[in-house]
Amino acid sequence: MSLLGIDVGTSGCKAAVFAEDGRMLAMAYQEYDYQHPQPGWAELDARQVWEQVKQTIRQAAAGAGGDPIKALSVSSLGEAVVPVNAARQILAPSLLNFDGRGAEYLAGLRTILDDERLYRINGNTLGNHYSLTKLLWFKEHCPDLYQQTDKFLHWGGFVALMLGAQPAVDTSLANRTLLFDLDRGDWSDDLLALAGLERAKLPPVTASGAGIGSVSPAMAEELGLPARTPIVNGGHDQCCNGVGCGVIAPGQAMYGMGTYICMMPVFERRPEPAAMIAQGLNTEHHAAPGQFVSFIYNQGGSLVKWFRDTYAAAERKSAAAAGIDLYASLMAEMPAAPSRVMALPHFTATGPPQFISDSCGVLAGLYLETPRGEILKGILEATTFYLRQCFESLPPGIAVSVFRAAGGGSKSDAWLQICADILGRPFVRCKAPEAGALGAAILAGVGSGVFASLQEGVATMVQPEREFYPNPSMQARYDERFAKYCQLWPLLQAYLRDLNRA
Image (cartoon, rainbow, N blue to C red):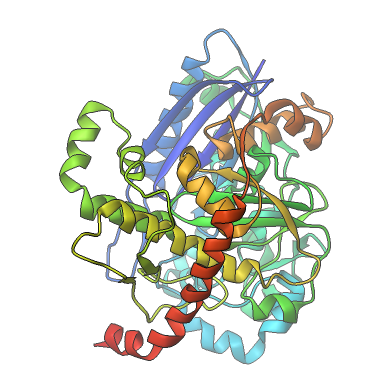
């Protein structure tokens, strides 16, 4: 028997079939673009994406050969929701978290709900990237659609519903709405009342790893799945990434290395709101029972993509045609020593603690003889320095002794060694190349009885490949570079803000 993990993201979806020992038997991927129908809008065509999700499931199931799929689960992007009616029909596109619609409601919400009160209930502070303001926008600007909507579903619950499950959302994704009570594990009547939204428009909250239905006969035939395949509740993609690389207990942290570089520590008790708010940190249920997580992040992966597209545009085309990993080739050009190039990674809006949006990027220390490999290493170091600033100020009760890496960037030995040297912690890379899909598959195994617990599933399916330890001499050199990095933004703050407004 095998397990199917489906991972739906902002720019692509994948489906992977795993044997019960963690070996990947088949994987399929489809890429898609989000739409910009008007300036400031960003949405996914839910009908198109659903068709592509089905294609990946069909391809992965066919590639699994004679190993029948026992159960499936879905990992998905966070805040975006899809409106569907009672007949499981898609009613509108899905507004992404960086869509500007809904920002107009923040001022009014702040007059009735201060950050500390919201944090005590939900574990987040107000922001337009959560589902709440998008739901308010639908209610005011599309009243007929709002009335026709039976449920606003996060992508994990939406895919599960379309496959045949009952409407559901897990606690990690429910948290991304700002309407969820973290301690009660259910929708907050107080927050719903303050927002003027109905509980009936939201699905029931169910734990990750719980059964929520089975694949319908029609879908089973269309996708090549066994009839009545159990569907198990999944989770937020970052939480599933954590499960897929074995990060399920306090003292561990997932280090996601994709478009976003995301540090996700695990802890079992909620810190005081004031300490978390001061660092811009959220609190969210993990997919692991009884555990919480928080996210420290920046768009470091986007900076690496920018470097590739700017400094190796011609090579990108030839590498794609030849099947060469261009990222690996570019990283092979990096010097062994710390880079002389100091970067300020404000190329786009930053993450916690300051969420800076009115700055811009800086590359300092350039000479005529500076090679592009040194620039790339300076960028990788800077994105890690940024996370170290927040990491060193974690509130009491959140501690990290080891990182487990996930995502495309984790394939690079050089990048992982930079992270270990700067952060002063061991980094573990696991064998599974698709941690999010593997995490969903493990949850599918738990919910279908293949594993007695999440701990058993992780122990069986997650296989460490290599550990990267901090190099004491490099760590000392990076400590000096970090001290200089910390001076860069305060020195240039006023100038860069004026430059960005010009």
